[in-house]
Length: 359
Image 1 (tube, rainbow, N blue to C red):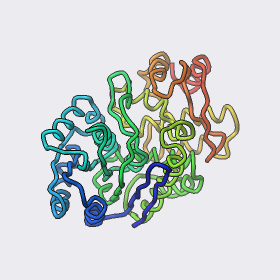
Image 2: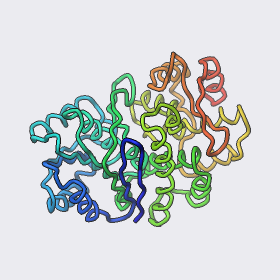
Image 3: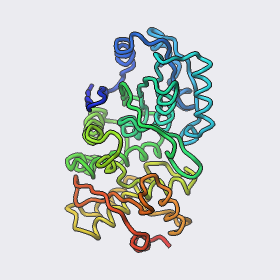
Image 4: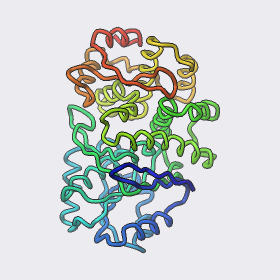
């Protein structure tokens, strides 16, 4: 088991990483939150079916929780589902000394964190991520729900009090969800850890979890990349934007596809596009063709879906919350571990999209 400390001026918490952590989770929460009045667990339908009963049995040794099951994936992050969760919390008589547990993937974490951030103007919550993607989303305190006009447009920064990442849960993930989460791990290697990227390229040709000790190591490295940035910029005033590498185009594809393509798969396409722009601006020490061949070998689609046009993508990217003064902001690389942000005019972006094969 590994532990990473997140520490900034206004908050601190631990991230536990290991296999079969349920008893450790309950013991730590019982110690850390000894004065909690009530506990509410928010999980998705898949996690409810597979793990909720055993998780509640363990939790009940400390506190009998109120449970709310929400839809799988991005469907959980709607205003309607958010309202249902608030009603459950109110009817369950949670108060300012209650605790919310986000038990599931990235969407559940975003939703539950936003419920915690806004219930009675903010109560504590912890993350118990169950997916590979959630190694990224569970850390850093970004919480949100979606609006039909854009992803994560309604949200708040609200740091968890702890993150308990039991990688034993990863065995239950279908292939597409494994690919989705692995894209964010690749991102962490590209923007902040050359050794991590080398490890992944050398050892991963398919995303399986046969060697959990390997995954403990690389997930710790990926999480540390994010932690280092979050500690310096908790509310995305400057360098935290680096974590959006691949996300500007990725979110546009995700929204235009009505979330039929997973978040990580969209981000992977966005990273491939950002690598193309980066390479045009200055030589990289890593071969983009080698990276794209590796992406394809693992099982990723690396191009924008043919049915999406340049006009659609530009319009959607303009709605991105990172757009400033009408200019689309992009995270690029001077090299591995050297991200930077730049404003790109529409005309230049159109040129690069055509170069990327979009019409």
